[in-house]
Image (cartoon, rainbow, N blue to C red; front, top):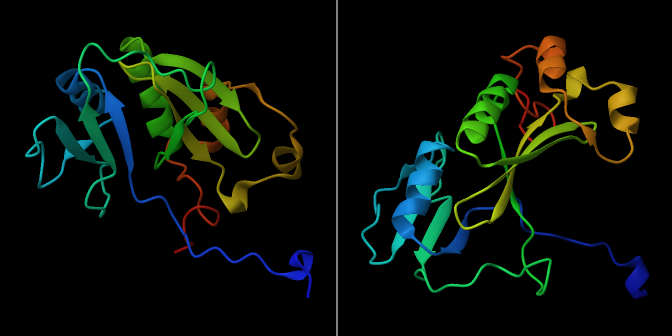
Length: 181
């Protein structure tokens, strides 16, 4: 059997948490709590210079860890001068949640883009440290059309049109990223 004949087996089935280095812990915690709706975990900010946050409805110990470096920390060079993580992507529950978040991110001065990827509708934001993140809503399997599946590239997101098409209460990723039921 050659290497080409071997089946790729991946035991990983989801991302449990992410950890970010930040300049100002209080400012970053406020952003992730007030703008994106994360809450403290039971450990809260019990560790000096660190905070552990959980997404609403999550059963993880924590979904996001923040570690403070201090004001002397230089901006991330990832993607410009160094290798590194481009962004994290979080999925919202409903299309209405994505629409509400677009307003919240815009009001916070944190919305930097919005894209239509065919099967996913995405907002892009930056936290107070300039670290980029994505928030996605995924068309449920039973609502996917051939046109959605065949869209090539990235287009401009017309969020109002998507809400008119699917409704605010359309749940993300049913049958795709979320088990039917």
